[in-house]
Length: 217
Ligand SMILES: C[S@@+](CC[C@H](N)C(=O)[O-])C[C@H]1O[C@@H](n2cnc3c(N)ncnc32)[C@H](O)[C@@H]1O
Image (cartoon, rainbow, N blue to C red; front, side, top):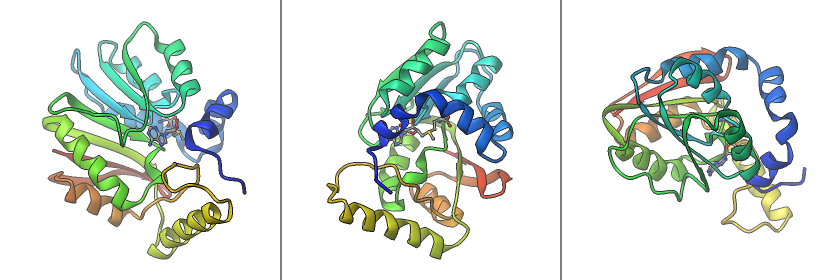
């Protein structure tokens, strides 16, 4: 397997991306609308989407809340362009970059969401990101994370080792993100969110190894 840089990987697969997500990923037709339904319905709600891609979750969310102000962050220029084409008329601010680097400020959002994006990173990488999300939420705000997870610690370590082996074999620089899935277990994900300061972290729904976790500030 040849590793591709994260943004390039998704940009190259743009044309088949949505059909793949909805048609090939178990229960996607359930967890996208389910995730959207958890987001605030209030007029002018401020929502942050981390790794928004072409915005499958936002297609459902904008149908429920047409006045929401959404900020979407993604590495892949082509994915953001497709999202803009679909929802150009909405209050949608798109930021091309890594959510690890983009400043999020404080008390700027009522809710944050991320779907199928954060399974590429270690707990150590996620901790400062989760702290940043925590600070960016208003008091009482919440983070909805829908993603897939490892069932065991052994699986989690195996995928991480494989990524490091492939990077080393292919002489790839450490500082770059490459597309290779390294999901955490739910306990490790929950621990990262709790360490970041979230007061209540709960699994809200599950479809096999995909879970929606809701974390309240
Ligand atoms: C599988 S897609 C999910 C997109 C969308 N949330 C959905 O479920 O259809 C993963 C997305 O996360 C983005 N991504 C991965 N790492 C990222 C990072 N560090 N910063 C911003 N976006 C990232 C990718 O570019 C890609 O568009």
